[in-house]
Image (cartoon, rainbow, N blue to C red; front, side):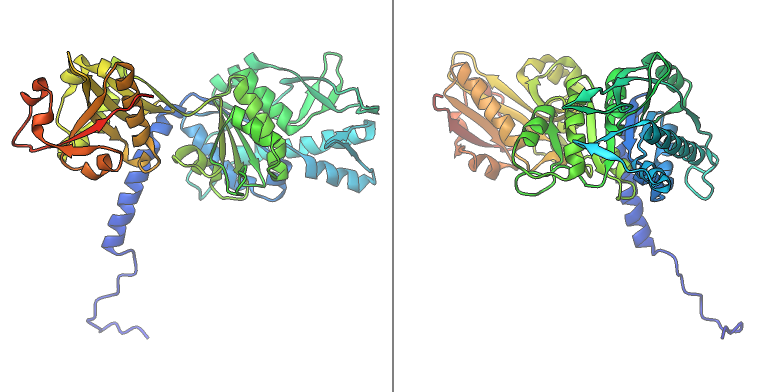
Length: 460
């Protein structure tokens, strides 16, 4: 019983201040880490494909929230839906038996009628869900316009291996300009797995063919497949976070068992990346928020396929100065590195090498050969904190060693105050200041008291 005369203060049942602070810190950290993606995705085209199961299971309501969020951030969305379970239900109600050959449905006239009806129902349901106000959701009141139509021209598969596939078709052409106009008008474009011929025929297409062809035609920035499996797996059975198109093709040719969805969609992802789509993603439809987690976190939750390696090691240019400064300034502030400043880096930019990942500078190092000698200085070695512990420092070090050897250097030295063990573990030996070249010795800061480490460079 409540006692109105009680003087005991009420219990605070909300989050404790410490927990609020921790939660706020985590949110700020996440938001800052997501900011580069938010900036990069504006006005970019994403093709997102999902099977009819997503609609049938009621999962599309959750997905709608994420799609609305992407659209509000300026992402241009092309959605490609499937309808296999809905088609099977229509066929079952009519007592029609369907036939598959090599995973492809043979579409006779009766089956085609079921295909058109099922796709029409799925499309209308998706349009309704995308158009509603999403009450009690983060996107309440959002105004989303959906465009659909005959954007896909198709041709028949024909007779293959003695089997006439009749009204089963393949994509012949995507109305690229028509879709782009809709996207520029800030509409979400919805494509069904149906195609039309110039003579007025309708063909039953596969979800993956429409999605891949649309992504290639639009030169999409991303092609995303929502599927049952969480991603592709390697020979050890562990999920693979990243693959190049070539690695994806080699994986499919290997004897590594893959989930059925991966065998279906991974070739499409590889093909898309071979044909100018920048990224393809395979993610689980069962994980709530998987689309956002894949797109706005560094590690993602599925398997990403890229045209080539994400990380490249290259000579720095003047445009990289800002990225280099962002890497080394925290290390300069805590005394790990000697402060250089923008002007000095700009004047010495030819000395720097950068490790770039997806357009972002995540590592850097500099090499300073000394005139008339056979030794060189390694300086400014830095790797972004998010990417440490995966051998990137060794990659930069090996590059510097190889570059020094190619210039006839036989000895590499570096000065360090806080990373001595790292260099010793990689073949450097501590020595006296007197071993420094005369030019460097004159610049040595005795107040800083940096230790000198030397490594002999053997010939390749």
